[in-house]
Image: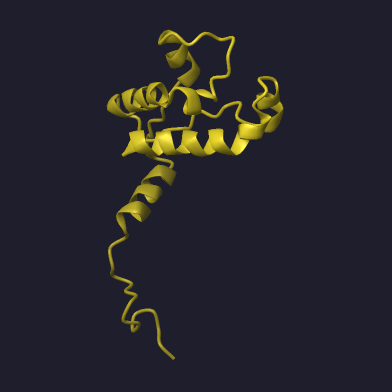
Length: 117
C-alpha cells in the first residue's frame, strides 16, 4: 500500500497551488477581502435609466458592463460579482425576457471573468 508521502504525484511538502492559496486567503477570517460594489448605481451613473432591465445589459451593452467591472478591479476589488441581481425567470418575465435566463447569466459571468483577468 502506498502512502501519500510515497506517492510519486503527491507530496505532503508540496506548496499549495496559487488557486488554493488564494482560496485559503479569501476564507481566512483574519483577512480583509475587497468586493466590487453597487453595479446598478454605476450603470445608472453611466446613463442607464431605471426603467429597463439591468441584467439584459450583459447581452445588449456588454462593453458597458465590462467597463464597470474593470473600474472595480482597477480600484482594488479582489472579488467581482456578476451583474445578475435579477437574472431569474420571475424577474425577467416582467421584461419579456424569461426565455433568456441562461443566455443572460452565462454572458454576465463571462464579462465578469474577462474583467477580473
